[in-house]
Length: 177
Image (cartoon, rainbow, N blue to C red; front, side, top):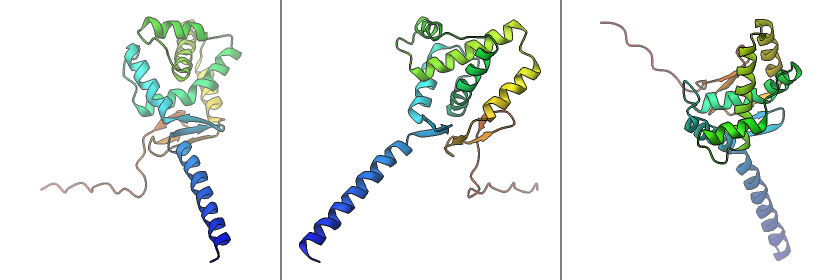
């Protein structure tokens, strides 16, 4: 190989490595993609830490439940707003600060707004089973791809559900003596 050919080959190899390294860094932090918008693992972890620190949930967030809240938040907020229920960003930020989270992340604020809207709807007693079905349908309209490490999206309940990949075999139950 001549020197110009080797240099060109080396440059192409380096360029390919840089391109794939750049893509890989984005992909490794992807918990889910919703209508083309990436929800990062970092966002999920931050929501877990911040919301759990607030002590507002009966059951603390785990990765699956936090990701479910992030997947549901945007379509639910739009649905509630269309039905006259608006959850303020400033109220969510204030709630977080009062509960000890000094600088809540955008993801945490979005989840808190979702919870505030849901609570307002429930307290109004105007959120009917039909409204709930319409909300689930709205969430399911999204193009949702979940990183298998977090589970799979279950459209029946509009939630991320843990899953066992097909290639993992469960232990057969031992026969009773």
